[in-house]
Length: 129
Image (tube, rainbow, N blue to C red; front, side):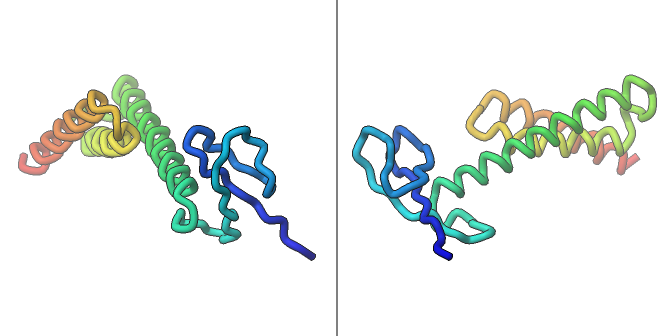
């Protein structure tokens, strides 16, 4: 049983996978065999490392948005108080996760830093009192 060799296109403008040694792109570029590691860490091919980072950032974004929506829901239905640890920790975690998701988008990163600082301030204030 022979393993099919996969190739990945290294052309800067395409970023598409080439599934055979004969790439269908019309521009000249180098091809590299795709590693067969089950848990590719991106060391073999930077394209995969970039993809893993983007996927992780998206997951952070979805979890962060879920936490903000949950905190908003809990607060509005009076399940938690604004001065509760649950609410403030939810906001802090959401701010951190959305910061990770927003890397590269400076205005949104600043918003998440501010969001997290306010949550940290509130947590410290509650702990002291």
